[in-house]
Amino acid sequence: MLFCLRYFRKKQKTAIDFALTEKLLGIKTVCLTKVKKEGRKLFYENDGQLFEIKRIYNRVIFDELDRIPDVKAGFDFREDIDVKWITHPNWFFKISKFLLPMLKHDFVPKSYFLHEFPEHENLENFVLKPLFSFAGSGVNLNPTKEITETIIDKENYILQRKVTYEPIFEDINGEFSKAEIRLLYVWHEDQERPILLENLGRMTKAAMVNVDFNKKDAIWIGSSNAFFGEE
Image 1 (cartoon, rainbow, N blue to C red):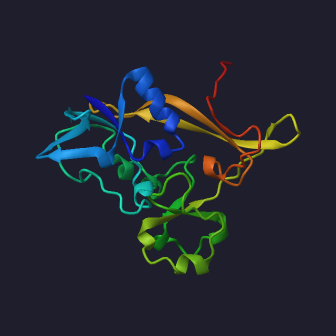
Image 2: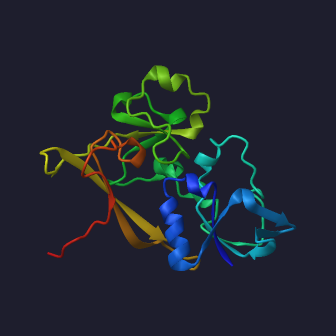
């Protein structure tokens, strides 16, 4: 059976995603605190009956998990267990901001690990980000030397060159929104490269694009699809 793995589903701001996934695709959502491990196998109890979990649609975010006190998962994500992962927990760390300092391209903002930040660069031109944070948590848009010097584990942070978002989308009130387009990929095991599957358009009037940083009473903010016309 395929299960969507999450924690405290009803408390999540994306709870609607889990409800629709179950309704439209028949993929049941299971809280990781309800998972039971026997040997190398995982099980989920429903109406007094144990069901083996063979495939997991993994929606657990480790950054959020670390902030939940006394959470008790039914297994350790680092264990070698008999399940098929979509996606594997390792990918949270493999495809992450950890890669950015290694990427050299005109369309990739220059990034450095904090402990390797060169003296010739101006700190005012960079944003401070924890390597494995999610949804903007811990991001500092205006880092100072005093702030960076207090960080003990500097290898777990990057400094990324700032990007200017132009507020070019005018709403009905004459106010302007900024936007970014995120590209979503899938990566098959037998493929050398990932495949572009979908996009996500994010609009904001705040300093940051993430949902948590947008004003609740504003218009022309949030997420949608971006449509591309042919020339």
